[in-house]
Length: 410
Image (cartoon, rainbow, N blue to C red; front, top):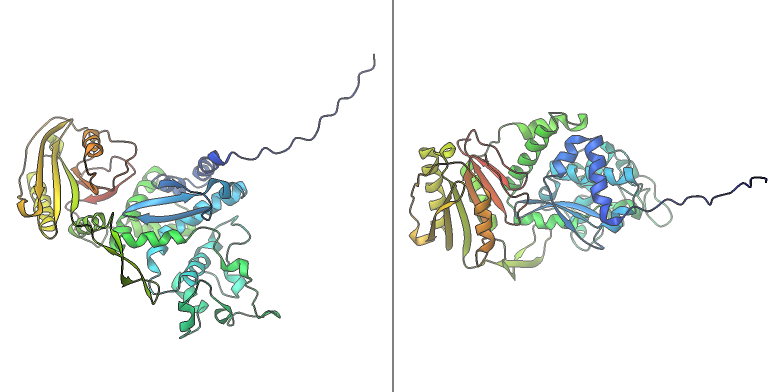
């Protein structure tokens, strides 16, 4: 019997599951550029729909990676990795908080022009300097200046750059546009999230980014992409900011969570009134003191307690203080007018989890958690509360989430 040739239909590529697209992209980034991958692991992830694919910001002191899986899945695997690197570089350059006084779309495009030339495999539609007949390698502020005609007040209104801001760039076609067509005026990631960065003082944003960089640098064994070596060296240098200022800004940021709307202030980027905020009447904080033997440094505890006391007395607040090591040993409740500086001595080993278990059961929930510890102990893998880790000089940050503040560093 003659054997018959059996033909099979051509296999069709199976589209990537949108639910896994981000995880797979992060894994590829970790393999190709470990520093960026480890940096991204410190972000809290937010899954959205129909909101621009991907974006990064800092919200109430927490780094956020916002992703629309369906939109991200439409890009190739290489483009997905490039978009993740793109978002990370925006944060490393503090672009979400540097654009005060600049029209939103102008700043959106300017920041993309500053970083896109250094990123391989960016989507074709991504803005690039050559499309505006501009040189590469400029800072975002310089691109913003070149994109906006001097004294062009009209650009402060509306949502687009308009032809007036394009007239300075090269040849124009019959429609009056330059080689920078309309597609190159729109970032391929979501910059609207940057408005959330207004919730965090710039100094605190710097500390959040510094913490992310230090942790990623350690996990990547000091290997950093060549094009950002100088930038990362700056982030690794000792900060020129006192720990007391970080503590005050963190508490101030926590006090803005849950504000109600009003119409009383100007937007930081626009020249007209926008929805403002009305402060919530009372700030509710949870302060945890690690009283294990390894953290028994009286002078540091007293200094921290005095500083916290001064801050609390400056506003209407309700503070719950937990003294804990492997379990909670003591609980004190204070209002701002009743605060007194006390030192409680304990002992034993450290387990950081009971404090956060307690926080989840509080009613109402605390606006933030402040934990004085050396960090050597098990902690939750993730936490929804904004958290400030106040570490002893030789302590370590126990997890990737939260903001690090090291006592004794001036």
